[in-house]
Structures are given as C-alpha cells and as structure tokens.
Length: 314
Ligand SMILES: Cc1cc2nc3c(=O)[nH]c(=O)nc-3n(C[C@H](O)[C@H](O)[C@H](O)COP(=O)(O)OP(=O)(O)OC[C@H]3O[C@@H](n4cnc5c(N)ncnc54)[C@H](O)[C@@H]3O)c2cc1C
Image 1 (cartoon, rainbow, N blue to C red):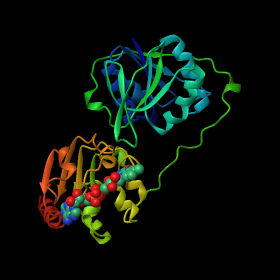
Image 2: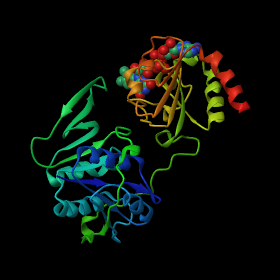
Image 3: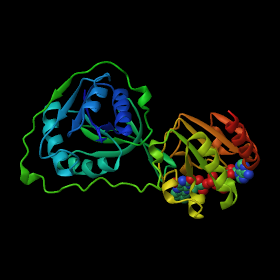
Image 4: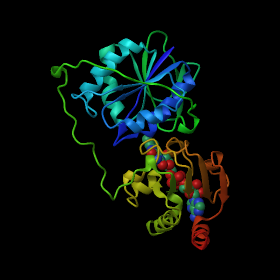
C-alpha cells in the first residue's frame, strides 16, 4: 500500500503536524512517500532522510516557490499519478484546509478531515462537539485524510534512512490563477500555544481576574506560555487566542500545568496530547484527574505562590 504525506513548511522548518502525519502514516503501514514542495527546504529533506519512509520527493518549480493553492493542487495531481497512493495525508492545518478540498474535488475522492486515531485502516473522528467518536473507513479506492493536532507524536516516528528524489513537474501558468499573500503573522502580543513546550493553563478555579497574575508569575519562572479554559476567556480575563479546547487551540506541550480547570471534554480534547499533565484542583473528583499524570488536590491560591518562591530559589 502506498501512502503520500504532504509536508508543510515555513522558513526552512517542517511543521510539527507534518511530523505527526508521518507518525500516523507509519502507523497505517505501507510505503510512505513524503512530498516537499518549494524552495528553502534543505533542512526539511535532511530531516526526512532520517525517517523510516520509502523516499522523499522534492518539487521545486519557479511558478510555485512557496505555498500557492492552485500550484499545490496541480503538483500533487501529477505526483498522485506516479505514486498511486491509497492514502494522501496531511496534518489538519489551515493550509491543508485550503488545498485538500480542491484536491478532493479534482481527484473525485473523499476527504476525511481532522481524524484523531487509526487502527487497521479504520479511522476515528470526533463528532457532536467531541462528545462521541465515530469510526470511519473507506470501502474502496484512495482517500484524502488529515490528522488532528497531537493525534500522533513526532517522538514515535520510526527512524531509518530514506532517499531524496527530485521530481520535475510541468506547470501551465494559466492553471495558477491565485497568488498567496504573505503568511498571516500574529502580533507579538499574541501567543503560539500550538508550538509551546510548557503551558500553564488557568480555569475558573482562579476565581477572579486579579488572580491571573499567579499564572503569569508561575509561567515566567517556568518559561511557559499561559492558556485558559473557555469561561476565563468568556469572562474577558484573557484573550481568545489563549483558549484551549474544541473551540480554541489544540496543544501538545511537554508539560501542561493545569490550575483550577475541571476537565470538561471540550477542554480535554484540546490538551490531551500533552506529554505530561500536572493538575491542581481542590475537588478530588474533578475529571481532570482522570487524565493527569500528577494530581495535586488543594487550593491553587495557596499552592502556587509557595511553589513560585521555591522555584525562584532553585
Ligand atoms: C460548544 C462548546 C464549546 C466549548 N469549547 C470549549 C473550549 O474550547 N475550551 C474550554 O475550556 N471549554 C469549552 N467549553 C466549555 C466546557 O464545557 C466547560 O464549561 C469549561 O471547560 C469549564 O471550564 P473550567 O474548568 O475552567 O471551569 P469549571 O468547570 O467551573 O471548573 C473550575 C474548577 O476549578 C476548581 N477550583 C475552584 N477553585 C479552586 C481553587 N481555589 N483551587 C483549585 N481548584 C479550584 C473546581 O473544583 C473546578 O473543578 C465549551 C462548551 C461548549 C458547549
């Protein structure tokens, strides 16, 4: 079985979710080909050469030097004819949401987006606002899929060595009707939670807006970003860019430090991919403790100031 993974990259760095897509493709099993489109990709193809995959295909073409939806579609259509994949896989990024539906229409095959796991070519997708899991499989023919952030871990990528092949495409300028603007840059005041390695997350348990300084003080000592549950955002205590959950960001830090968050499913879907979860909650039956690696039952308003003092002494 052939699998094609489309790699997303920016400024010479491979997107974390593309690595997760490789891990997911390896879990499906088969001959995995990674496709890199565009210039400034040496470090990406180097990194891919250390993965246990069939090969990396590199397409550089003057008409598509960076992301362009028409160019990507045309290139992938030509690659598909050669690789003949059963699965075409990406991370469920904004870019994938742009080109995958067009690819689906052009190839006349289904696109099953935002999958969270795979077992024997059967996929799981969260439905009903993440309250239920649906099992989905394709009865025939190739299919396009995208994986939700943190559904797989780049740490589980099987390492090996794989060759790089340059692939020539012929592009008709008339097919490339759109041009991409400069990628959207978040302002410096906003955060990139999805790439953060350490996160201090606050829930309604901080009780009032003034107490959010406790989270920022802890985050400063740890070198972490601050995120929040939805009620904290709805109350206007923190901006929506800091919300984690089904209607916020999906994060997968090395440590998720949860302060006064109950662990409602809509929150948990956004952070369950964290490598370690440390939760402080005064309710010993809080659902967050079901997924926590370290559980502290107590009042965060007592614990955190003392913890900050101890950490400062280290
Ligand atoms: C369509 C929809 C989408 C949603 N999307 C999201 C989303 O993206 N993200 C999200 O987070 N939620 C989302 N929600 C809301 C979600 O259902 C929960 O209501 C929310 O996650 C609860 O936030 P919380 O844990 O901060 O608050 P609560 O559920 O009120 O929990 C507060 C916790 O703090 C503890 N606590 C209180 N005081 C202290 C203290 N002094 N010390 C220690 N612990 C204390 C309490 O025991 C409690 O467990 C969504 C809901 C809907 C319907």
